[in-house]
Amino acid sequence: MVWRLETERLLLRPPEECDVPTIVTLIGDYDVAKNLSTVPHPYSEQDARDYLVKAAGNLARGTDYSFSVIRKEDGAHMGGCGVHLRDGNQNEFGYWLGRPYWGNGYATEAARRIVEFAFFELQQESVWAGWYHDNPASGHVLEKVGCRPNGQDTRACQSRGHEVICDLVVLDRAEYRGRRAA
Image 1: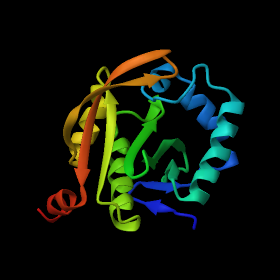
Image 2: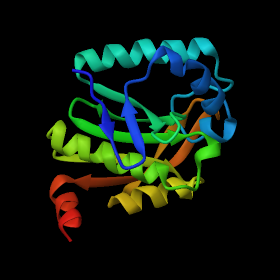
Image 3: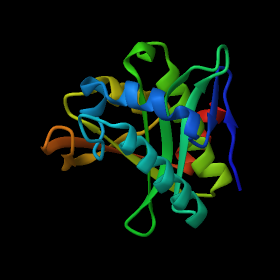
Image 4: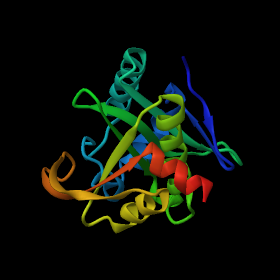
């Protein structure tokens, strides 16, 4: 099944070949790449094409749901988000936006929709996420979505070439429903 999710300002759809040039430009910015665990720097067109193949295969297996974040107003490809099955039954969600789109609430809007997708379309009981300690803006997004702290760990960061302290957060479906009803 091909999922297309919407919010007031955004369309979340599977990544497509037409996204490759924008992905390379946006995620090729070191200030974006350094906040993601598996993104190399520099980021090439081949890296983007490999990502499309991997995303399509994972979607077909039902282990990973990756989306391009598109602004409805003008069709601008702004970044990506997704829900990823980890360690057999843990559901991590994540998001990234290119620098030109920071500070406008798009990350929060995309993160909320991807959490709803995990809870209500995929019927997951909980989701978790992590943010690098030196990226507090991502921590604020996760707080706005309703996540609560769940410890710290270190996580590899391919673009930095070393492990980075990662703050972990968690959210369960009952907590999320309670916040939406309030």
